[in-house]
Image 1 (cartoon, rainbow, N blue to C red):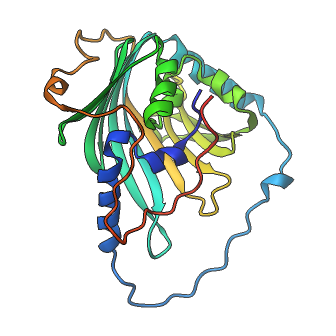
Image 2: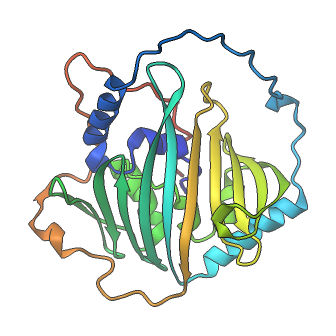
Length: 297
């Protein structure tokens, strides 16, 4: 299954339908950056430990927390939550710019998913009902529809393979999150401590590495639900950070009929359900990005 693809997601900008528009937003933002008025001495880089020198360790307390949150998510027949995602992209001055999206997510196992996303760019909607996948852009009035496999896990993989659609919260909605982590190689896991800041509740903090990505996760001490994740792709020389905040959890609450479809898309202009070819103004260049993580399984 798809795993910790925060870097790939920042390149693909959540949905293939909207890639060109988001590139335009990026280029506009680049042009608006101020010219620095003073030159400051660059501070000496901090001494970071070499990951090759770290002995792989799986602390039982950390792996137990991962298993508990995975079990809680896997056992839910219905779920809804809100995400706020921050991802970084290099600016023309060097330091990264931060871009944000927010999504309202609803699922019903084993075969229904809805994602309504607002971003630093156009609005997008994704619907999966066990038979079809629909990617809808209400502002542009564009829709792409494709047949879909019979499970959420398989549909997410198909959406990525066919149309470069990826959601950074994928690991929360697959059938068995802990199994996915282990399949990609859980290299290190350690317990950090507790926080009373994130999510308005007490959380346990863990750090772990898997598939070339370092993850820090805040997990509710009482409800075992993830409240925040921060990720850095180990092979990214810029060490760009990606942060996922999760709130408004609703577990096993009845879902209204009609949630996993939209009548508005019926009058939209159909386009192929396929990966986009970003359109960039003549003479412009796409922002440089770190290489994506390995392909989906």
